[in-house]
Length: 139
Image 1 (tube, helix red, strand yellow):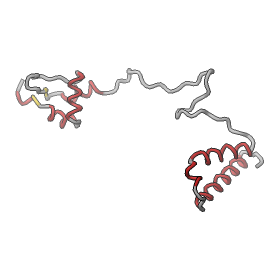
Image 2 (spheres, helix red, strand yellow):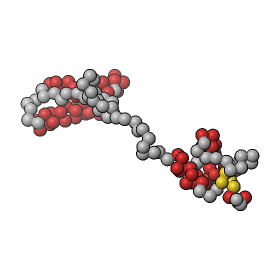
Image 3 (cartoon, one colour):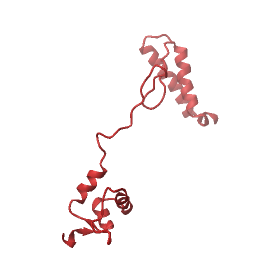
Image 4 (cartoon, rainbow, N blue to C red):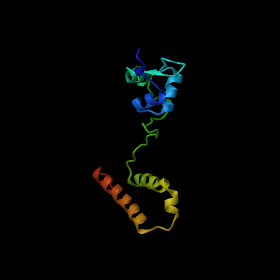
């Protein structure tokens, strides 16, 4: 083996586009290995391929599983929020919508209302009314 094929950790980090500490961790974890352990030198040819093969995510590795719906617990959306029934009554929908708006940012509504806040409040009511009318319910 030619001595020109031997490189340091710093050179390996530059070649792999990683930090020196990432290369050091890979050496400590056994994902890379020294060719000359006394002088702490790595073998340059095929370095990228060796590093890629030992650090790439495996398709056969266990992945994080999504939450499943079971009879003993409520249905759960991907974000972890429980599903709610959509009300068929206008006033119940109004209460649901306004509770989301008012509970969303209590500090926002604690101040003296300004025209922008009141516009948002009115827009919420108008949007709900148009949804209910589109579904054929009576407001």
